[in-house]
Amino acid sequence: MKKAQHSRSEGNQSDLTASTYTDLAAADVIYQFIRAAYPDLGLPELHLTPTSRRGMGSRKEQEKSLPEPVRQKLCRYVETHWRQEPRLCYALTLMLCGGLRTAEAAGTRPEKIVYTAYFAVVKVQGQEKGGKIDKILKRDNSYRGVVIGCWACYILRQCSDTIRKIDPDWTNDETAPVCLAQDLSAWVLARLHECGLSEAFMAEARKDFEREVSYNKDGSLVADFSAYILRRDWASRARNICGYTSLELDQQLGHAVSVPKHKRPNLKLSAEQEKLAAKAERYVYNPAETKNPEHSPIQLEVDARRQIPTYRAVKYSNNSDKPMLVTLSFSALENADAVQLTIPCGAMRKTVVASRPDDAEQRQNRPIIGNQMKEA
Image (tube, rainbow, N blue to C red; front, side, top):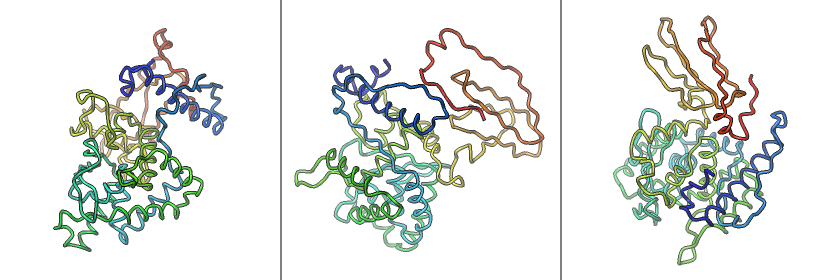
């Protein structure tokens, strides 16, 4: 089983068993929901729930998303109110698009964000505490660089410029936070209610929060409820839509990681950061502010060889005034997978080679559930 190589088990059979049972049960819930929601797909009746649930409670799943309409309204609120509330919108964007904790978002100043052409790296190196920036974080893993995408970069730039114009003295005080974590927490919860998050969702999330989050010696909670909601939402979106691995999630969230350092991706390297940035663009809120090639076509260049990026849809464009010969080579994991090539009016298409290999080794390695999407 592939799960036998999962880093969290570290070869421990009891941990491996509990982890495998948990993942199978979670997969069954998702699969049954898809079958009920999309009967036209004709998915087979499969029951993935383990026959024994021994050890199921050892690792409770954390990935619970905000309803998509609520998330859309929250993003829309940020887009329309960053001029009036630049500090709070700035911090909310870090929480929503980077999974930062409330105090971390309040204590991460604009100079800690390194921008590139289409993404940015947020250096989490402090948190707001007592109205100042405290450079002592929860654990060593909390000191990290979080990769964020195009839309978040746009919002953060606008908010940062506005804050500097409104309060130029704040720029010179490196110990001053962006806002107070307590104020940010209350404001975020108010915005979630305003955007339509139901009382039932909040009540269930509150139960999980109080059951799973630990307490400090003085009896106060280690984490904040608003951050708990948004971090779970970011984790779910990054895992299920963007395709982050479990290890990448742990690194970006600042969780403890049991994998040896030499086996972890070095997220300080630009190549690794670019990989994460490409994944982050798989979730699109605003098509005008994204590098997702479905909405931002890739420009073709003469004598340039490119690998087709792994997105649901990819668009290319020839921006020169001369015709161009383009050769595409692609394959599907399954013979039944739908691959559609659309060309503009006036362009000529010629299929040179079409191969449909299906040898014994491919059949043996084929997943039980393939791509059931019908060809358009």
